[in-house]
Length: 410
Image (cartoon, rainbow, N blue to C red):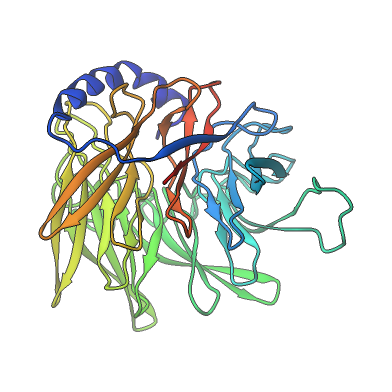
C-alpha cells in the first residue's frame, strides 16, 4: 500500500524511474494549455495524507477525506467551496473518537438520500466501518458547523476485514456495494452489499475471493455496475499469471457467480478499480510492481460472451519499481481518459496524463509533472472532473509533507 512505509521505500526507486521515464518521453506529445493550482495544503490539524480523491457536488463543492490528522489523529472529512476566486476549506468531521471509525482511504459517495457515504480502514469493532455524513438538521448560525456522522455498518473479524481504497456505489434501489481487502471465506477479500430497511442496514457477502487456484484475491478498489446489474472490479493479485484479475459478478439463482474476464500479466498488480462508459466498456490501469513490472492503461470491451482486452498505453518500466496509477481514471465527455501516476514524470513524484483516442490508437500527453515541492507528490486518489472539464485530485505527500488538493484547469 502507498502509505508511509511504502512511500519511504520508493524514494530512490522513483528517481531512477523518473530518469528512465524522462528518456522515454522523447516523441511523446507535450502538455496542452492547462493551469495547475494547489487548492489546499494540509497542515495536520485540518488533516493529512489524503489517500482519497475528491467528490464533486452538483453546486461545484469538493468533498473529501484524509487518512490521518485532525484532533483525534484518525483523519478528517472536509469541504472545499469556491468563493470568488478562492477556495474556502471547512472541516466537516474528525474521525477517531472512541468506538468511531478512523483512517478513511476511499473517496466519498453521494447516496440516494443526499448524504455522503464512505468507509474507514480501522476503528469501529476493529475491522473498519461504513459511515454517512450529513449536515445538522437545525439551522446553523456559523459557516463552520460540524456535520453529523453515523456508523451504519461496523466490519468484524474474521468474517469481515477493512475496506481499502474503493468508493461505495449505489444501485437504483439504494443498495450499496463495496469490497474488503481481506476477510471472506479464505481471508483474501470479498465483495459485499449493504441493504437498508428504515434506519437499519444489513450486510450480505456476495463473493469471497481465493475460492479456486486461479481466482483473483486482495481487491483494493471499487466495483462498478452495468445496466443489467452485473458487478465488475479488479483484484491486485491472483489469476492465471499472478498479476491480478478483472472479474465480473452475475446475479444467479439468488446468489452471485464470478467470471474472470481477464487475467493480467505478471507484475501488473492493479491497485486502481474500473470505470465504465455508456457502451459497457471497462477502463482501468495497472500499477506495476515486482521483477516483471507492467504498468499500463487498458480497455475491456464485451464481444459476445467474451471480452477483448486492449492495452491503450504502456508506461516505461523499471524492474521492481512502482510506476503507474494508484487511483481510478476519469473519462471526459469526448471519451478522453485522464489519470495520474504515482512515481513517474520528470521528477519521479508522479504526473497527470491524458489519453486521446485516434481511430484504433491512443495518444499519450503528459499534462503536468509533480516536482515534490509545494505542488505535492505521489498522487494516489481517484481523479474527478467537473462540468467544465477541470480535473481534480490529491497527493499524499511532499510540499509540507502532508499532502494537497489540486486542480488542473483548461
